[in-house]
Length: 518
Image (cartoon, rainbow, N blue to C red; front, side, top):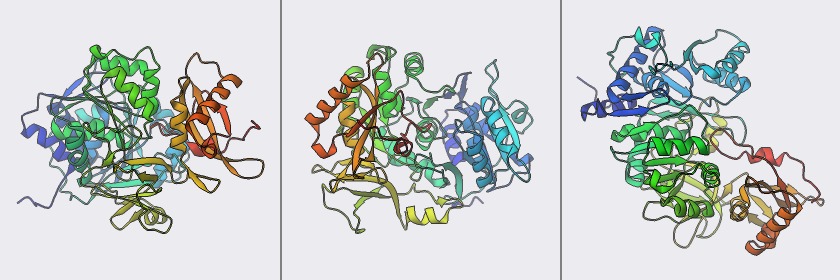
């Protein structure tokens, strides 16, 4: 008799679509082909059996370092179906970071895309003790996908491991926007919970939708967008191994005609400045989503005016797996992150560990079913982040008079200038609103007297000359929009801002740059 308390996330996401008669429906489109739900189920079962045949047991880890293609859901879901824990990592890291993650996770096997293999081999060479086997994912020119004999030699039938809802299911490493990444452990029940709490009621995803996420699958945001959400309702997901660029996104929006697009603010800004931005008549978008960084109000308004679709700005985290605070399709308030999603409880806490009054800035805490089990091998960080049912997000917020939450910056990015908090997000939004600015990041820097003042790093739009004239124009613009203590004391022009592969600005790197005399 089947134990009613068991639950396997992969078996659910695959099985619900076969049971609904969607076997012939396209589940994934990648750079090499189109794959039905029946194709996906076959690949997942074969991969699960291939892992078992290699002697990898339930709860042991395998490292996935894969570009977005059919091979990612194959390996990710195949491992989960077998009760093995996939650890999805950023393909853009270097040998040192890979070596850390391999040692930290004690992975038994590595599945890696061919272009990343040299860096992974260097990482392996630096390890002491037994080295895990490598399986190369190398999609073939004939469109048959990767893994070759790994899948061909494995049986096509398998019983899913009798895992439990609270059992560890997969790991994601935090993005490292503030330093060393942490292995974040998620349970089987969390994947479908993100769809039930956000994708279905807020995003309104349906079986007829085609989803394209510029955020990659190794990122918590991309994993939900491009894997969990479409599989939860039987929709179709478009994957590409290429790094997102305005030209690539424009091509996919025109050719595949996705109805839901998930991006990050810097990408929306770049697309608005690009000649590759499609005309609304060329595309089929009905929903656009942004997360990863706060969406400047000006970018949201310009996108809605050009494309005719609002951007739903939200915030999630690796620790909470996906978005828990968001704008809604019928309630978009640019310049805010919206309101809490039903099923999540939020509170804003002050320095005295008590809730602040409406309008006051504090630390955002969240309570919800998708919270991670904790960090692997990092007891101190787990205790600091996960406090009973609450997760400390590390973000500063305040609630406005309408009940909308306004992002003020990461807790360690906030500045106190003249004894008053200054939000880098507020100053950045003002700079981005200037017509010559593509991107901006603001950090605190000490002046000659050791006092903290705002320092801005600005990326100008293409063809805009940078120099004294533009700096003066931005200073005048800031003077019109900000009180004196919030205005940038220094403006530095840069060609690009340092970012994680998920699009988050690494402000800690900007704080390390020397301050000029200007």
